[in-house]
Image (cartoon, rainbow, N blue to C red; front, top):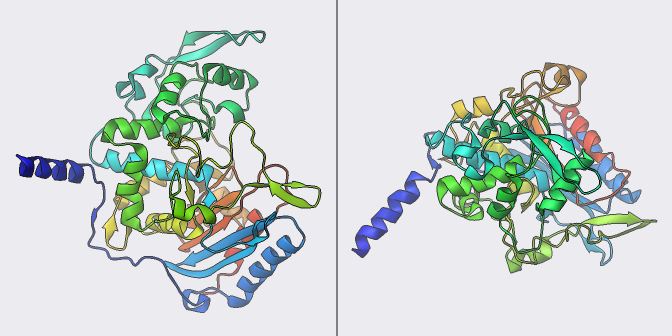
Length: 428
């Protein structure tokens, strides 16, 4: 009997594993000489000088920068202090709260399950999370007590809408519409991060009862849609979201430093979130969240939109998976045909600028590529709430990651400078 149960557990796990062995055998990221990968050492030195000057000018307390090309790390350096108060030096393996960089990882989990035929992207989310019921739009809002009336939406929220921020769901405390801030607060929605005792499922079920900004699929509103999808992954897989990511993405890729809540032995590598007071960098105070959430509190809220912490190298590993069309080190997480869909414009003409939006990332379009400094058409990118940025260019096979950890006003221009200078260092 025990043997039967063991075999059953094995086959259930395999059935939901997502990752498989691959005929391709791309190597894990290793270090290499810039010139061997068509990058100019002299020009990389200018990037180094720019970042050093930014720290010397006290415009940032510290940073970690990483550049990879052709699956090889050709630049990986730490700058300044991880902690201005203790004067602790920044390390290359420092751990940062990556906030919205979590979203692409959550999207990857969703699409791994989609590849197994568990659902269609245009299925209504209410099919799997019935609390969403029939979608409702905000009609009349009462400023005095935050009560409201609703009217039925014509469309229902789909899984695709949630991935692409076109569902009409808002983002609570950081929402651009004050009415939704008040409604989300009154309903007790947990936004972004928390040390409180709540689960992603409990928060999403509260969220499901609230009205939408607009008709699903008709506009882009940055939202908690990826939090909804974190709970959706739990429903579909039957596993806690953190366990799913660890078992099916982080362990297969060797991402040992990417966690919602860090093991005790990694606590000292977590960089404090800092803000500038006068000329000093100090720890960011507790506001609607405690910045120490990765190492203290209840540790039960697995935010698919903002909850992970990671290192520059771990996140570069995740991006390299996409540059390799879904495979890394002989492990395939996604088919190259799925990657093609992920890297396609999913929101039509809703954005009329230098970017489209796909199924995991912002995507540089023809107009953006022509502007210069952003990468080739198809370059994918995003950033995080605590001043982290990344981009990856499939045409040039380049990854750029810049990790910082600040909140509040900063005179920081490293994001655009770093990106522009990385592409200027191509020499082949």
